[in-house]
Image (cartoon, rainbow, N blue to C red; front, side, top):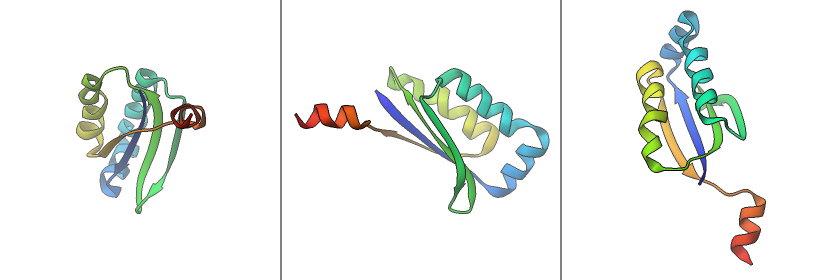
Length: 93
């Protein structure tokens, strides 16, 4: 299922994670694991954040995706099922 992963990192933890390299390391490992069809990084509610759209083949993947974000970055994490325009067109036929 096409899924959007949204995450934010508290400012203080983000500052520390940039200095010690764990922010980039965690995100690179996540990108290697998920192979997202798209990934964007931006400020969200005054915090560092981002979103990735990827194919989640099984909900049992949620802990292995979320735990590094929780443990390494104190991130807030949200998973949202999403559709692209082709999916929506098919659903509305």
